[in-house]
Length: 557
Ligand code: TEU
Ligand code: CA
View (cartoon, protein in one colour):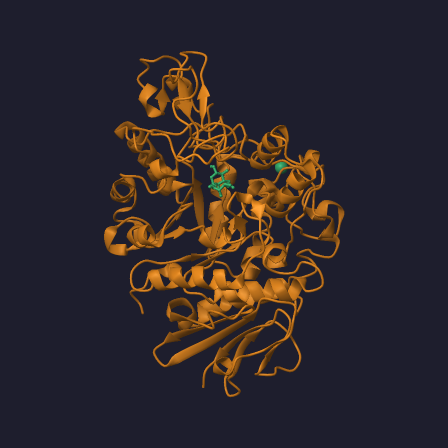
């Protein structure tokens, strides 16, 4: 339908600049490095690049701690380098989405430097300052996402400030209208520069209950969970609608906006993405990437039950079928690699990576490919603390070990779930450091780069890359893939993921084997007359059987 927004048939590619390509040998990826590798993106056929933060930053959280919203950190290049990248992307028909991190700033942002200077500074109220509790401790019991208290006492005044993430990421006070206007002005500045939209970091945390009450605290737990006071908080839809009116109104048709929203519910997601409400185009939800977490959270590693995955993604497909829109992802810079997580990064790497890609990309929604996913890059699984770089993993390790946890068990959870798995350098070729840098990389390259790399895959039949290229093309070429409705099949099958997509008379059947065992298909999905639109394995196809990690996209006769 001509009236459908362009991003419904688009595929987005996420670049984590620090780990993509280093142009000057300092061991850190940079903007000229990205610009030098645009052929890779063109070959894949993607429509949009989402660039993780490149702004000036002390890099406490790899750029998610911003000290200047309107410039580029010298480690990544200059504003001129960014303008050049933008122009080159546009020349190739691709758009650029910037990361918008406005739940918090760096503690080195001038706004916070002023704010902390005295109790009556005009910017004092731009952040969440509270006096100590009666015992001199923090104002409430909230824990930070990066271990420890969510409060830090500041020497200048003796008050505490709130930081949901690192102590170098103080939370902005969105109750203050000056804060909101300053953010909107900055966003307009970027749009005027030519960027095509924003991925909004933890944007469903910006509205907090100003009472900041204690959260529920499990027996023996060091901190309480403040989530009910800041996840999808009281004014969240008001703030997002205001942002839309102040920043996007009148120019939104060409843009793409996606809100990153830990713990967003389907009910809120419908509100956020219903076009009539004028909020956001889509959100990143977290339910499906929490299914292998136990009751104690992400370090409590469990095995995925495929039925849970189908139930979860199926619910999201259904909830956003009439109004709103899904984003689709397995990976980003915070998640372990999907081929290691839900697939098999050993003997069945190519088959499982392509099966996972097929199942995801055939859902209704806008797919996001995270750098290296298109090569089947796997978890690195660091075994030593000195190999870790991520503040979340390092803080967790320090706190857990200090609290008496077994260091071997702590490292094995980090090896499975740690964010550094996503952040090892892009594997361009089999050469030293995978062709990422001529210097010493800021984080170790995965030793498997000798076999898993772009040079070995681009243009090579049977590779993960070539399969992803076909998936992107399928979305561009087949309206049913972009716009068709979705029906989940076989919800109780333990290893087969099956669904249909339908647009008018056109119906696709999608099958994926989430196991290394051959499986006999239940009769309702055996279709000898259907045409094979896309498969991930070569050789003879038996309509009644899926081979290990096989995926098929069939067009019903
Ligand atoms: O992440 C938000 C978030 O809640 C988690 O995914 C987080 O990465 C953590 O793993 C929780 O266990 C966003 C960014 O994507 C992340 O890189 C930043 O560290 C974080 O916000 C703070 O800006
Ligand atoms: Ca560099």
